[in-house]
Image (cartoon, rainbow, N blue to C red):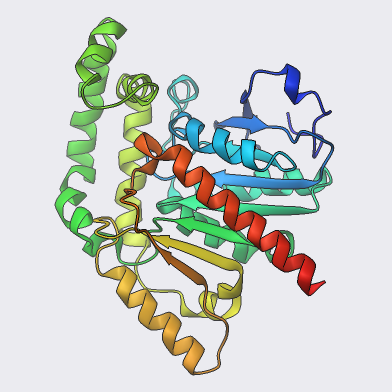
Length: 320
């Protein structure tokens, strides 16, 4: 599916994004992908890792805006394994958080084997934590990571973590999956109508599709439960070594982050004062963008990230 690092310069004649799937060699499942080929042959790639639920269709406005601003990059948006309704139907096992990391590394390796010279990573929410894990595994291939509303430590202690953790337990997960099964028996237009006041198009249709897939719902809830006990202590060694390659975008009042952002800021300040490394670039949102930016603010977030990439390229040329 991804044997070449770039596509021929025919994007003007294609309806983007291109939709495909990536069958994983070691996992019993595939990842849904959105592909935006570069407008001219290029070995530069951007790999986007979503939050949870990791249904990549939510991010189409964001990725489309990003590609319009960065046509010289090929962009690949990657669903989490099991989170796409049409791909989750035949998947018997729930794919855990560590296996999701391995799945992203597998895709990155395929891009590198195909000739990609550099791959920028963008991660949203838990996708930011996954991006950090991928950078640890393949540092030579990744010059920069961009972490949007990142959940990087003690997610279970955040306001939303404390409030929602009970529904991630096995029994509620089973019951909600069963409810999803009941919803799948309804005519699709009825569920879409009921969501009309909650989600703008096309997010409404994406949410309806997700809610009508019991396996995708179970995958998302099970992964969330694992996040609660896995994402805990700050990895200070990571930030000491790789902080110079990261840009973090914090949201004011982000209830999936809470006071953890300030704690991380303290870690970054100690690293800088102690001369132990360069802290990441941090940007605090002052535009009212929310943690679930992909629902309402995808284009604006795409514009911001594109500018950071352009700034990074300019800085690289000056330092060359």
